[in-house]
Image 1 (cartoon, rainbow, N blue to C red):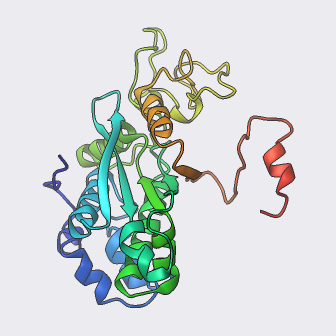
Image 2: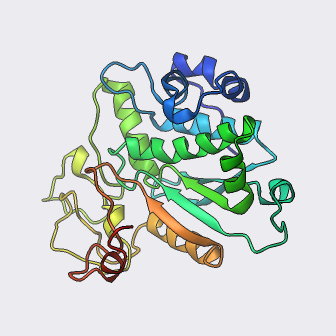
Length: 282
């Protein structure tokens, strides 16, 4: 079960409930409505305005509770520290397809958006949530473009792939009021006593723990430490298992990062990237 966090920032305690009222009373498109965006996705925390672990969970929990006819939550697996990795699924295909002339019995396709493979890239957590809220805002206000999107596809959102890293940042902030720029997960099994990695540099880089072109020479304290072998981490195994489960459904995946203003085609480890070369203007 998902629980309401007990220590949400006071700013959000008022705005998260009821979410539907907040969306209804702000008809302007989400992209141009700074007030609504501030209410949902920006905290008044001094210097660091991104949502932290408890606030992300609070928002996801509220979305699921207030849109039960569209939204379901699914744990895709556990982290190294035994936390659930939550995926929020929006499915309006059966509900909305008849109103748009689409066949509600047609094979369902899904789009997957993920964030926070690297936990310190906190805006990458907010982008999947923004996309989900944008769809629901359009649904509430009868926006035909958004309703058509909801009728045609399912949408899967995993805002915090590196759930433990996000929780560690929040925990450190509560204890010190300092931002821990932690990138990796919390798995320290592969550190040697002589490594003595600082807190910020402990763990495995989840983004480099997948099986495709696995491996580099980075040691356990490196930000790019890939682990001892592909899928050594429960987070990447959870992602792999989820993708196998939905392999006939998911047709597009977008992984949000926050390193720079760029769109990276898979597979970025290849010298000659055939996907990018065959789609030069995509």
